[in-house]
Image 1 (cartoon, helix red, strand yellow):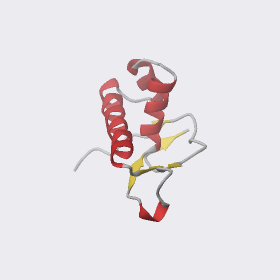
Image 2 (tube, helix red, strand yellow; image 1 turned 90 degrees about the vertical axis):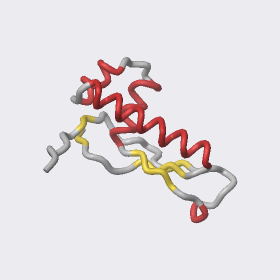
Image 3 (tube, one colour; image 1 turned 60 degrees about the vertical axis):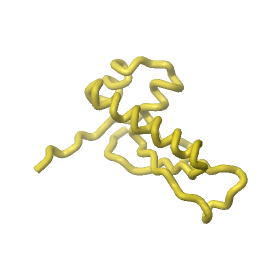
Amino acid sequence: MSRPRRCRRIRRQPDIKYFKPASLRKCELEEVILSFEEYEAIRLVDYENKDQKKSAAKMEISQPTFHRLLKEARKKIAESIIEGKALRIEGGIYKY
């Protein structure tokens, strides 16, 4: 049996939780789900320009775990842009 995941600390939920290509209707799109902790990792490193070690400390997780989270978030965002999929931000195991 695997060890239960620890809650990751996020500052707040995003104001906008859904993005889609402008030319397509929502019902025609496949979705990519970005968790709140993946969103927080992107926000800290790419938006606030913090390094991974400080960002991991803010989220109360290890740097290798943070790196995996960031890598997965970037992959999902790239998939959404390149393949024209909608991006929904929801879910995850987190606390404020």
